[in-house]
Image (cartoon, rainbow, N blue to C red; front, side, top):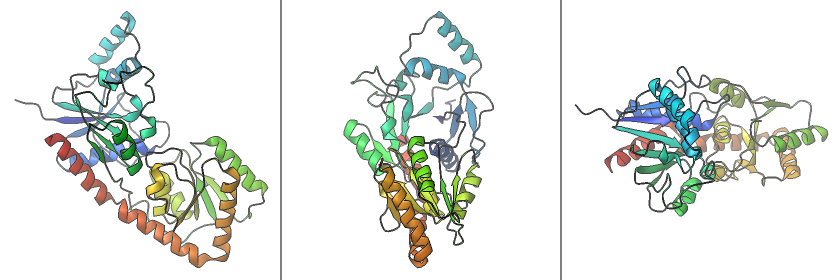
Length: 347
């Protein structure tokens, strides 16, 4: 009897919350809800992103992840490494011949060497990581050009355009990401609170925050970093906050600013390439990346708007929330995921 098709999403385990992992978990849930057998593939038994509310089926394969370390990085396989792979294969989930592996973009252009006989899809959530871990790869035969690569899935207009330019022969599909409106929804009541995520561009963040304090930011306003929080806690902080500071940096999409907009925050800061499709001037305040003084002045300007023109910022906050929740709804995401995968499997 032919084995049922299983789609395995190769997913790293992080010590911190990331939008990329969140979207893999979401996509696996959507596929299973729509009759397509999919699983997260983590490294070690028991691994799971506990900061997320999602609960997709999970399998484990230290063997696959060790292959990624060796082969995707073009390391020679000596006797010791062969023995290591043999042992890990014995304790790993057996990946059947009727399987599809979904690789994230950051495993590079040698990922096709890991399971060369299995079909694969690349879930490229940040096109600017495409060439990471790819110092030594074949221009003509790489992960994106290999015959076993069925398609590339990406998450923004910017990433789709970038990837189509580089790899014009492979199908490149764009998904609309969905914002969970049960967590990230418009909040009318706000504190004098400015929130931000300190994980990326820490040097810029340090300058912006310290200069803002030195310039004498009104003491009635609080700065709240969002770190080591569950998805539910992140949403609560955003719903309470009036302003969100975006430190997007060459993002595939840049999920946190969009989630903050959904919660009715005025977003100030860096667009980050992929964020251009939602960082609209009607309701957000962009800053050129690296313009530290311009960033501080824009925050001060928006704080002053809250103090002097609350009617304007109320309209802008609602516009931002409506735009995000209408364009990046869960229903839109589900529709796109199902359509993309049905077309990929059919072809």
